[in-house]
Length: 147
Image (cartoon, rainbow, N blue to C red; front, side, top):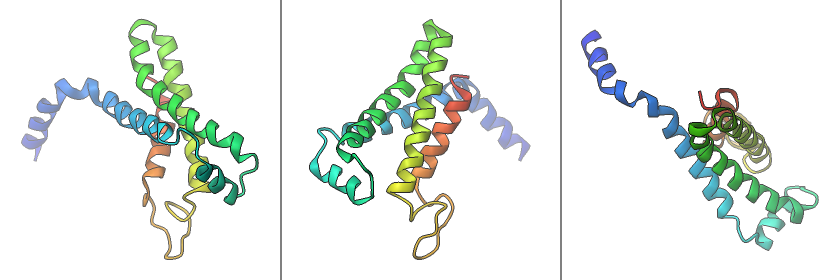
């Protein structure tokens, strides 16, 4: 077992520096595409938000879309900014991670309350949705920044 672990450690060693980058690419791209997919804001999306009890849905809908786009870009670009200006890049990554966390809390409560850690008709299973995973990644980057 130790030999296998050592072999895997040697194979992974040159790639360890890129592990956070892989998470940033996945999270940033996902968020950007989810937001971009909401543009242009449709009456259907506004109507759906209204049906979920969101007041001023025509104001909230573009805020959600642009929040997702900008938070996704912030995660993607925060690490690149860090190459030239480490403090600014770290700040962009942390703020974007925080924004993703807030957006995902709203998404889980409003759109996916029958998934994840919430009780659905058949009973919920922890980590049953990717929304919970996105929330945790947002929290991760809000805490960790570019470290």
